[in-house]
Image 1 (tube, rainbow, N blue to C red):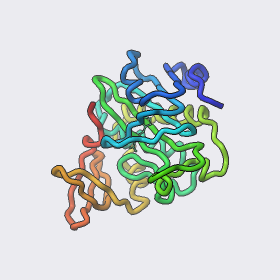
Image 2: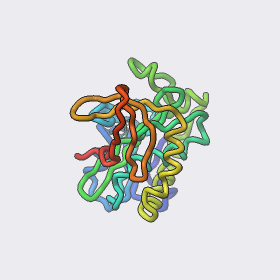
Image 3: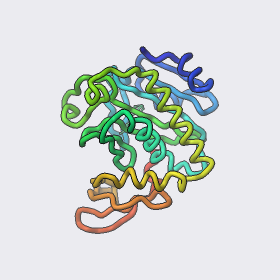
Image 4: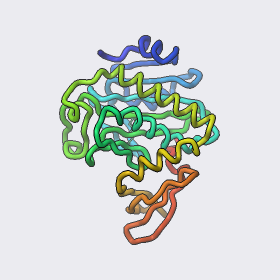
Length: 243
Ligand code: BTN
């Protein structure tokens, strides 16, 4: 079933929803909308999908691409980590060996299944999610580095059903974050992130630094050991992309 705005809105308690066939980027479409958050913009494909740190997000038909716009909240630095955790939680019953990689990617056996990009716009945040769902294969570099739910399960998924369950889990997580703060999520996030040995790449003093994730602190900071053996922390504030 293709995604329908009216049905999705009804299933999400009247949330404002816009669904497009193809857009440049749901992030930009959501940013241009003048509607009171929360609201949702989804598309079947994107011609200029954006990834983190200025990368492109390949957005062919078959994937799920959406932006959930929310009101900024007190601990908005935690939104990237908590939204990726909500996505992990929503999918972990459907996918074996699902790993969350710091800060907000989902992998299965070293292949990327989903990514989250959170941008701050004025008093709003745009949580952008790209999830590989019904693609049967990937081309170029992605052939060896990406995987879809269909490739894992051998069956097709209903994009609208998936969208509704993921967005409702994310809205719930955002409410919990607003009410209880990041400390409500830190133990579970720490457990999920530290379940696998994680290589991380961060930009430090204008250069890319590679290392391993050692811990996630109470303020969302990542404790990292660089490949040269130096210990340093990366504040969660660095995860929010300004625009
Ligand atoms: C990443 O892993 O680099 C994050 C990828 C985020 C992609 C999604 S697709 C929907 C939304 N619109 C975009 O242009 N990007 C995000």
